[in-house]
Amino acid sequence: MRALFIGGTGTISAAISRRFLEEGGELFLLNRGSRNNILSGKVKEIVCDINNDGEVVQKLWGLTFDVVADFITFVPNQIERDYRLFKDRTKQYLCFSSASAYQKPAANYLIAESTPLANPYWEYSRNKIACEDFLQKLYRETGFPMTIVRPSHTYDERSVPVGVHGKNGSWQVLKRMLEGKPVIIHGDGTSLWTVTHNSDFAKGFCGLMGNIHAIGEAVQITSDETLTWNQIYGAIAQALGVELKGVHISSEFIAQSGAYNFLGGLLGDKANSVVFDNTKLKRLVPDFKATVRFDRGVKATVDHVLAHPELQREDPEFDEWCDRIAAAQEKAMREVRESFAQA
Image (cartoon, rainbow, N blue to C red):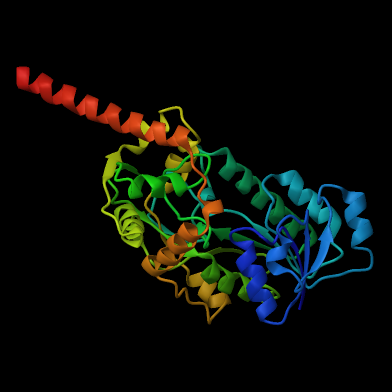
């Protein structure tokens, strides 16, 4: 099978690239070439800007593909660009959407592909919905052979998945754990969440590639393991060998703090309890099974991050925010206790 990946070296797409190559696929990567060394010698590089139609057409002259997968589409005009470039070059076009596009708040905790798409909290998710709408219209009107893929919270060896973090990722949360500082956990920590290792995601994705039954379909790919956020943070602390000092703070309070994009990332995503029904994926890819249990996967990720200082990106601004919001809640609780004591 010959495939063209646009991107191909990110958290999810790097695992897909590796698995596709292991399965004997012929892989072309179209990107700016900044991280292609992680697959060096195994791929055919097309280094250019996907937004430059003329350059792309020139570099793809004479090439056709069984699959084109774009991992970096976020708004409909990027889908329109891909249709213009690849409609006559591929037998299947795979587009990355997001499970955050599902109805928020959810009417049912069990999420399947039939769950409505609606997210008033997060522009990112609404743009993904608009991308899906555009693709569905193309499929209905022109027969464009598309498949929509919806990932949820997926992680790799470079970044530990947490619910609340700053602009530099999750390292500052780990650093707080190592220093014995309180760690912010949204809500009461009992909402349900699913975290998927990128190697498991790649199994499902590669099973959809070249799959005639996936044409015209939207398919979510996640682990079947469901955890509470308390369990997620507890597993991370255990991997670090430290005691977790979790501070539970209302998701609404965090979202209204004015810092970062917690309105979308929390109320529009992680604060909602979700359990994914992967029946459709398993029907399309019968041998799919997620095998990386979170406590084991996150231990490997923690060990990797600790061994690679370049991944330890400190974030003093987020560190200060954590201290301030934890102190604000403690002050509010103290004032409430004092007011009742005086009554």
